[in-house]
Structures are given as C-alpha cells and as structure tokens.
Image (cartoon, rainbow, N blue to C red; front, side):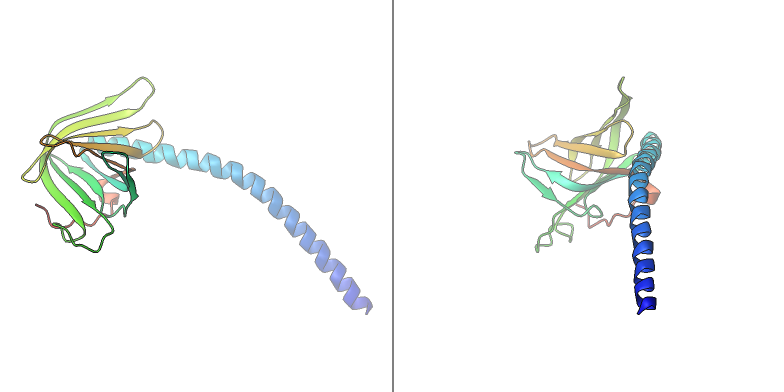
Amino acid sequence: MKKIVLFMIMTLTLLAGHIQAQDTEKKLSREEKKALQEQLDSLFAVEAIQAINEKAFTLEADQVVFKYGNMAYVNSNTNFVSVKGDKAVVQVAFNIPVSGPNGIGGVTVDGSVSDYEVKTDKKGNLSLSMNVMGTGISARVNINMPKGTNKATVEINPNFNSNRMTLNGVVLPIQKSSVFKGRSL
C-alpha cells in the first residue's frame, strides 16, 4: 500500500513539473514563433521581389473576388498568374462539376507581356503593372505586394469588357510553384 501511495505521489509530482515546463515552453514558443514567422516572411518577401524583378514568378491565388465583391475560396494550384520572361499565363478554375474550356472548371489563357513596370513606394510596398495580350486575353494586370511579405493581390482588368477580377494569394519563384495548367484558349 505504501508503495502505491509513494508511486502516486511521485507520478503527480512529475506530472505537475511536466505541466509547468509545458506552460513555460508555450510562452517562449509563442514569442519565438512570432519572431521566426517574421523572419520567414521577410525571406519570402525578398525571394518574391527577386522573382518579380527577374520576370520568373507565379502568384498562386487561394481567393477570388469578383466585380461586385462576391468572393470565393479556390485551389491555389489551379488559380494563378504566372510570368516567365515575356510570356504570361492567367488561369482561373472554380470547384464546380462543369469542366469549362480549360478542362478543370475555368479558363486558361496564354499571352505576351508588355509594359512590364515594377515600382516600390516610400513605405516599401511593391506594385507591378503589365499588359497581357493573347488570343484569349487582352488585359491590364496589376499586382500589389505589401512590404515584408510575399502575400499579394492581383487585379485583372480586361480591355474589352468590364469583368474585373481580383485574386489574393502568394508570390513564389516559378521553380517553387506547384500549379496545374489546364488547356489554354
């Protein structure tokens, strides 16, 4: 009986010490996690800026905002704007049972890039504007990326209609991107 009581006391003591250690680790880990996340964000931002300057990037979008403010969450590997040199691909694909012109529920258009202009404002926010022209698209594409992150917003303004679309996502170097391109128009 004494052994059982002694064993229970030791177990409770160890358990209390373990809980206290976890509590201290949580407090430290939150601060450390925040600092680590800030460092990662700044590294991703530098990588994204370099990819934009080299014209070799993909903006993988996980959210689409339509002309009148309606919003939809989408798969980032099938909704993207990609630039490689003087060529661009704009693809949107929604999670619907209809296959769409690209075979995955949306539209994929290939085009040529012109008027590629990158600017950084006084606060360090990056803005990119370019024209994308091809058989299925003629649009002005504007990308805005706040300082210190690779999260960005791309606004697609077609030249021949007013069906403006906004995509929210992250900018990645083209070699780190994992997108699936459907059939293009």
